[in-house]
Length: 171
Image (cartoon, rainbow, N blue to C red; front, top):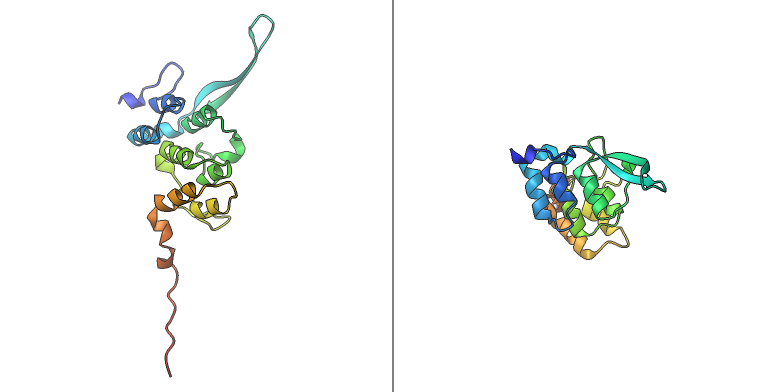
């Protein structure tokens, strides 16, 4: 039950791990799987502060931060609250691909959001699986496309879902 505890800022162990630059995807997945509700828990954080001449805070901006948002800030990825996340604070994989993330970044995001991963889901807009969408992007590495395709082997068995052709009869 230690994973459910919060520190004085309201952060869980997953929040704290997401701001650690040495955190690996395996560490992130372990904590996320051990206590899934932590991946969408929000904590208020000061994200911008302005100081006056006497070094007193004159203006500050607070934002509700989920573990994924903390990880994005730590990795210096810019994001837009209204575009990049759904109502639960979950980032779609297609959004992460559009931000130009490499495989290690993508696997970290999928690890943080382990119970909410949409890696095997087809985009409603493009009708592409994530690896297909990645293949259309100029800056995407072959390694990222390859790992996305292998992440969920069921995605590659599209032929099993297509209607079978009828064989022509010889007259």
